[in-house]
Image 1 (cartoon, rainbow, N blue to C red):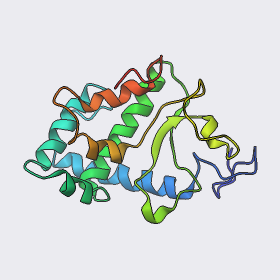
Image 2 (cartoon, one colour; image 1 turned 60 degrees about the vertical axis):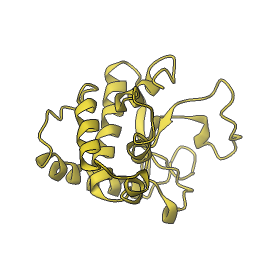
Image 3 (spheres, one colour; image 1 turned 90 degrees about the vertical axis):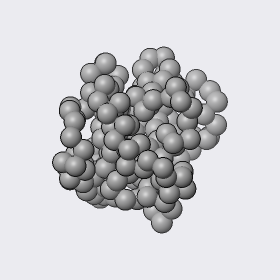
Image 4 (cartoon, one colour; image 1 turned 45 degrees about the vertical axis):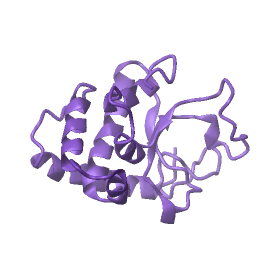
Length: 178
């Protein structure tokens, strides 16, 4: 449990799930999604199926745009609000499928001047331990996705790729979505 300042009481280290920057971003994006959804009618029920409509809406917003234009908008609500929704679908779908512990996170050591936004990952990932070697080549790999980056990257993916594939990262065995 955290102490309200983003510090884990269990380990005395900054918390990856209770960080003030994370909390502020989530509140801001939830509100922004309400505005975004008002101009993008659909069934926004946090289901995996709703990601097809989300993808179509975002692609429509950027119709004719080059990837650089999409990436330049990565801090604007037209990207961040749908990215928040994508992250929420990952968290909720994983929980509904029995993969408890999928949560929003932020690395407290992040340089926030170059921040791409928070990510969704598995609680207790060994990468949260600063003593853990950053290899991600062994059996301790646990999935994580950065929804803002995923929203931008979808414009670079092949024609058969769909935004709903992101949720598959949290299916067992991990990583079946890509």
